[in-house]
Length: 304
Length: 280
Image (cartoon, rainbow over all chains, first blue to last red; front, top):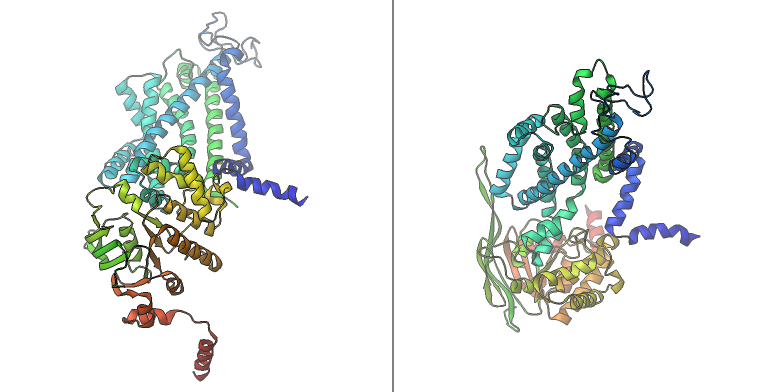
């Protein structure tokens, strides 16, 4: 009996730090109900995005000329074949929303990956070498931070030319400074620790010290920031799409759908509302997950 | 101390280290002299203890000897060859000669590195020993410092302070250095563990013919392990001689204060203290 109760404790002790951290992380994460709900919603979203061609009742570009601006099924004149109604050229809104999830997740993944990878690289260099290189990098980041982010993204897209790819590049660039600053601060804190000096005495060169010794120990805040910028990226891409600078029609991107539907806002509320609701749910879910991550990973927030 | 019985492993001549505190609009830049011209030499297989209060430049000197930081001026000879790391990064051969053990065993091991990787890392970086041999060498060293082979795949958080310090010692010895700098290696450990680690260090010194530079502020530890003693006070070596010389006949005022500050727990001194208390 005593052995059975003692076992889980020792098994937690035997685990590798990654496994142990994961177990500990899940303990703190699952305490936050909102975060768990957010995670479920996000998982459903991923499944929807992956299975969009299977579950969507219509093709996203298919125009039904006999069914223009059909209201959702629960309203008068609603039709069962168009569950959430159709837009101004007779395309099924539900199908377009399902396909739109693909774009949104794609934007989130690409933007946060690019911003994370480049930000880590630049931040580690700034934090490790300090001196003039640090000053140059940080002032550059300060300049980027000084612009209103959407305005800067808008300008960049205007220069690069409108389109989803350019919008993603612009948004990634706008989010860069946050990652650089975080990485730099974490690297500076870790760099003076004894184990780093010990690795140096053992003969480790700067590259090994930066990326093998120091970097794995400062990932926690970066993961949180990556999650939060995931949702921000979706939001900004939607905003760019709404302004006509992001994904171009007829792409079923949510922001672009909103922009196309602007003129029907009084006549056909569903054309405008539903893409907005989709954005809202996605961003809310990811933000909840991000907050949960922050609570679970940030030692200062831990209630133990 | 003056009789040279063996080859000299490390010799420092007039080692200085200045730190410049940058000035600002309202303050002038000033220079802090952390180490003010310290000379020493240690023979093979001997132990030099450096004693002094916090902030007297002990650890700065340790970092200079370990080739972590360069000295501002002065000459450092390692196995008779002059070393100057301010010009070029130390070569792998130099790195192999001198290693360090830090004071805090909780900060000196990478929390995400398995013990086996901690021990094998110096070999990976400095030598091209094949992987199988590396593993064997690490296993041998692990048993030599009193740990077991099953500890090989564990992570630092699973060990106590004393065990971690053993791991740190094992890591330092992986490259078979001739000189080991011990920067207060036992001051973070409790007393019984201190004794174990000190005994381990003494055994290893015999086995590998190691030369120690032992930094401490604990005089009882120094008396146990040192051959020569250097007392530092505000960056200067105020006393330098063999252990018996320094302990029996301290010349400098600070050394005497230091000895007087050591708590004494024998019956005689307790009686004397109580008598003084009564008289007062």
